[in-house]
Amino acid sequence: MKALMTLFLGGLMLAGGTAVPVQAGDPEAGRKIANMCRTCHGIDGYATIPIAPHIGGEPVEYLESQLMAFKTGQRQHEMMSVVTAGLTAQQISDVAAWYAAHEARATLPEGILAANAPQACVSCHGADGISQLLDAPNLAGETNIYIDTQLKAFKRGKRQHDIMSDVAAGLSDAEIREIADWYAAVGLEILPPPE
Image 1 (tube, one colour):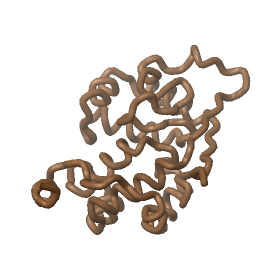
Image 2 (cartoon, one colour):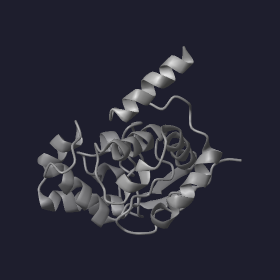
Image 3 (tube, rainbow, N blue to C red):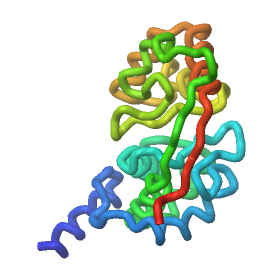
């Protein structure tokens, strides 16, 4: 039965589906794969360039789904599409497990109240930018350029998502910038996986 399921899921992958990989990810194997990610995202998931997101401490479900979307072409990016094309479903699970094993901690700037957080965002991304859902990314400490770019991509239809496309469509460019500035001001610390 397991061999049949593996064959079925493998066929879905080749057909461009986004089936969940067969085996749970191995963080230690994922650490080795993360060496190819470190230039942009850092080995711990703290991005080293402003146009790349911090991915340490993201929910494993979110990381896997985004990596599979790049691999299958559902999501396009000049670098990520190339990188993921060379990864197996198991390697994607492993690298997602590595980054998800980290802990992301957020701190609002002194004197800033969570009650003033962007109301369109808090139910999924939290007032401090730490995801409230398994399939939503953390926004804490992302550069305002990155957040602004992604929200405008949803608003203009360059990225599609059941929730984000509608949310972004209702935002003005000034509101997008306010959201981006809010989450960029949040302090982010990414802690290593427990030993």
